[in-house]
Image 1 (cartoon, helix red, strand yellow):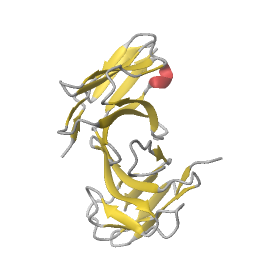
Image 2 (spheres, chains in turn blue, red; image 1 turned 30 degrees about the horizontal axis):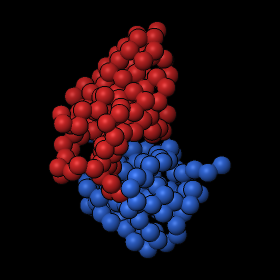
Image 3 (cartoon, chains in turn cyan, orange; image 1 turned 60 degrees about the horizontal axis):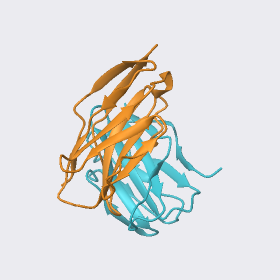
Length: 115
Length: 113
């Protein structure tokens, strides 16, 4: 089955620790995205990547880092510099970032809780 | 910067009735796309319907339809014959051509039996 997988589903982190969230897609999509979801605020873009080995900051990139070494993978690292990391994180992908229209397909999400 | 506003944090509707969710947006662009996404309790984001700004005809997908008023920058979602499975958070979202999505804060819809 084609789709987007995120792991783990739930993640717990102690303060001061870095943690990496996994996102994998087998849809052969060029572009991938990371969003953060907080109650009452909808989804906000953290980082996005249009092509392998290239990525851009979104609206709330501070305290996060990403890599795009393979087309199918776009891991997100939440660093200790992120002041309030407890949130629901969603990964998405689309066929091509700069064409006229790109439907974004979403993964099931990861719930990160800082203890 | 583009903004999307959903003024109804929560709504409820009786099963089989019709409900309308509101959305307004702000942009200086003339070409863009608008979307409604559904997020049920499983938290999986599901695309419900999309509207291309250059099309005057309102989009329809089965029981879901939109009222797109470009001049007023309004994009409401109408759900007809509401079903219990429609209970979810609904997000309105905006996209310029080839650009990133901007989401509203969401409206929680509860369908009651």
